[in-house]
Amino acid sequence: MDSAVIVVGAGPAGMMLAGELRLAGADVIVLEKLAARTGESRGLGFTARTMEVFDQRGLLSRFGDIEVSNQGHFGGLPVDFGVLDGAHQAAKTIPQSATETVLEEWATQLGADIRRSHEVLSVREKEDCVEVEVRGPEGVHTLRAEYLVGCDGGRSTIRRQSGFDFPGTAATLEMFLADVKGIELAPRMIGETLPGGMVMVGPLPGGITRLIVCERGTPPQRRKTPPAWAEVAAAWQRLTGDDISHAEPVWVSSFGDATRQVTEYRRGRVFLAGDAAHIHLPAGGQGMNTSIQDAVNLGWKLGAVVRGRAPEALLDTYHAERHPVGKRLLMNTQAQGLLFLSGPEVQPLRDVLTELIRYPEVAKHFAAMVSGLEIRYELDGGRHPLLGRRLPEVALAGDRLVDSSTKALHQGRGVLLDLADNAELRRRAAPWLDRVDVVTATASGLPADSPLADTAAVLVRPDGYVAWAAPGSHGDLPMALERWFGPAR
Image 1 (cartoon, helix red, strand yellow):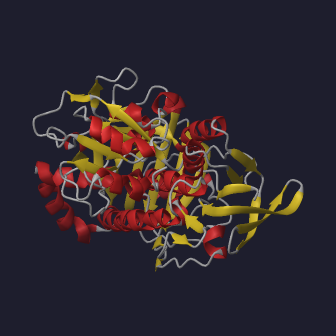
Image 2 (cartoon, helix red, strand yellow; image 1 turned 135 degrees about the horizontal axis):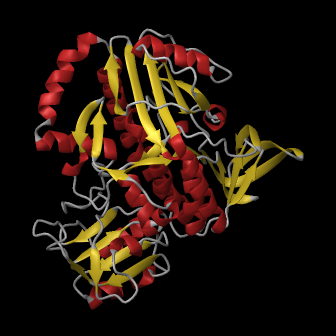
Image 3 (spheres, helix red, strand yellow; image 1 turned 180 degrees about the vertical axis):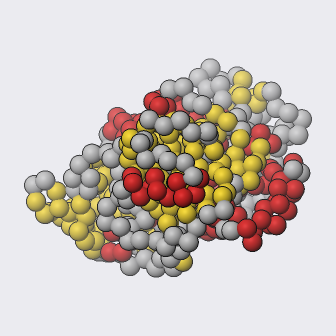
């Protein structure tokens, strides 16, 4: 074997997955057909859930000063995300190019083998491996790995070569996206619906302005090259009446509202993550964030299996957990597209939703949906309110090395929080200490209504989700440890 895992695609999902695999001790080769990062930044900023994910790996400081905000929207209707409980707000102005740089540096430092200018030509799955035919700087050659993961975007070669079904709806419109210099426009951070379509304006660092333009009735085009800046400026003038043709484009792109999801995230030894598994209208900046979270869900599981620490059946939980998340993502982005991009016939619906969003519980529902904080995996292990949810950040007292649940997850291992100094609990967990860290501490500063207030112990998976809690889980701790971390040693 050339590697335990081959990842195709060096975007945010591919780089996050490579880092997660290396944390788990798995060898990984990343193949990317581009010679260098494009510098383009379709994705912009992080949701609150992705902020948590980066924090649990100690990555947030690598992004420098992060501008955060509680102001968001659903389909262009303002929503106050401050109604959510959580340690983090959303980050608003971090370009995808910076995210890719940080994640690539992290994965490389952990030992990932990243090979640029390597294009996958074909995929052949065999009984004991996957063979990938690759064209690189030194010619065409074949690489073999136990598993292959396609993180190669909406036009995924891996998805096509491996025969995944990708049902959904084709694009019905075209939108322009451009980063430009040399103009001053009033911010339209959540967009503005106009008689002929929609425009959005957002200031970015370095004197750059992000523009999104959607002219209603514009049919989608199958472009082989980006649209010309003159085409974007002309659409802007038709919608707004303003001439911005004198601006200097940094880069220009186009996208549509095609909505598709693969029917299975795994076929044998081949997996898909990110845009390779689901494409949709980029409403609310959810695409890149969901892709990163796909990678975090898959990475520790795949790493455990290739290291022989968990049974192969663990890999089936990737589809079981992430396919419903992707399905709900497609639903909410389609709904936002109807609200945002339709004509005056939808205005009564916008007015009704605007009224409803004034109710805190409704605002909380929409904010949690868009931010990813609503996710709960169906683990069928009991009734504890945290089971299947991501553990919120908890301050810990009593352990000399770890002062928070977030810091306990930095190494990408499972964590058993012993919150009642239970020697018997620690004895029963001892056979899994090569995979799970035990932290004996007390949770400090908990509000009275915290689900941890009466909890004696919590088993947290490497991705931060709660797999077992006491009291409140069916079965005992060894059963949960074996399910998620393999047989005792």
